[in-house]
Length: 248
Image (spheres, rainbow, N blue to C red):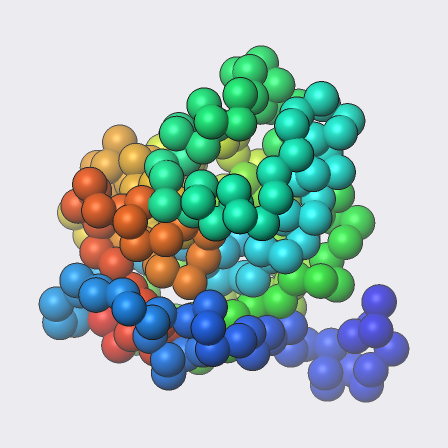
């Protein structure tokens, strides 16, 4: 990979994706047309993040990989128009809409993790994430990551320095199995559920937070659109800068 051929000082830096304005991923540009509902500071002692779509921009890679995996597991293909429509649906509605049998979900997830390990060059952090993690760590907050992705893949994208700021990695979670991983981090941290928040980019992340008893946060620059969170009680963030202000 290219970054391995750069000087050693650069190898310790995370990969940053400046993204594009219309997707709302800039740290200082809210998602257009979105009304966010966070109100003031949220100084949680434990902040747990989903990874893909929340901290890292893996959307383009995911959709390319999904149709490839779909051929292997005999799923129907989805075009750009349908993808955009699905972004306003809940995670469970999407699974039903695509007609994915429950028994295939673990197989697909495992295959996607393998592909992600082999193709990390196309995934980078959203701009502003590095600063946010540094601010959280600087104020003494504990930071965790709960993801369906593999820990090795996540650490490679974060880089050694930011990886060291993450106190808890719970990776390889099943599609609807993140609540158990959140509870595991709570036990390890010794903190109460009321002192923690889990932030993701899909409705299944909000469900996991509620099931684990922690506060729920949702970012609006990831996979799901604001409409998907309309029936949830999640605090929504329209930009990385906004989330940094709330949490830091």
